[in-house]
Length: 286
Image (cartoon, rainbow, N blue to C red; front, top):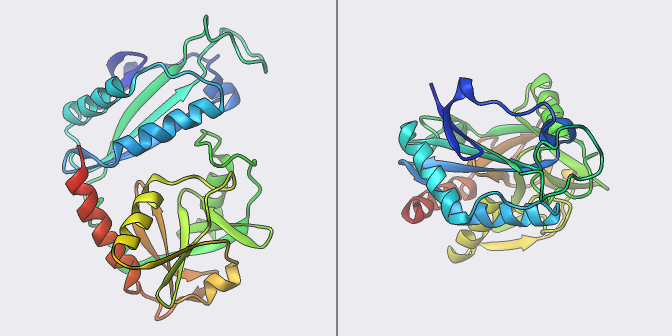
């Protein structure tokens, strides 16, 4: 049975509980992060910690824990749950004021709720999906306008995953005003010629931690990167495509809306970037 972390305590998962008045439950008033674990070490912890603080600041929510203590909690959960490859999920909500109200509770009297738990995923780095690539469909992006804040409002992304599953695909890319924003839980990229193209940072997409690392590694490897909007038709005509996220790293996309990209198998850029990302990230893991 897993050990989880809840509000300062390490508990068996079946003994951890949160109030029915918690605003994460009632209002989706919370933020989260997912940090990957490879070889028992944390991948890009600092990046996730910085983005967590940014999300909290954007929602005027205070953190119940310091960055240093948060690192220790992550490490302890990895240790006690014997995680070699997997993920740590972290969620902070505005807390449980004891009743339901649209108005934020007084932060002096309502303490934020913090929860962390592990997910063991053996074979995460050597995923078979990365060898064959994934298929995506396109759907309308009807989410709220602050996708740069990593909130727990994940209903529409979940619906998007189910639309993809129903269509026999693996995921969905979302379209707004004719342009691809991102995947349901990942950033989206296309490759044309020797150029990697991905949407620039704004309130329209999540500022991916893996995205930042992959683009840095691509530039260091002398690959050309262009940050701009691209259409779904442009994506279908691309030589290859891929996604990035903390749990998939770099994952090739081989089909969009039934249209095969290139030879219909992973090209050369995405697998190479995945190789570089894993190699460099494991060197820097803590």
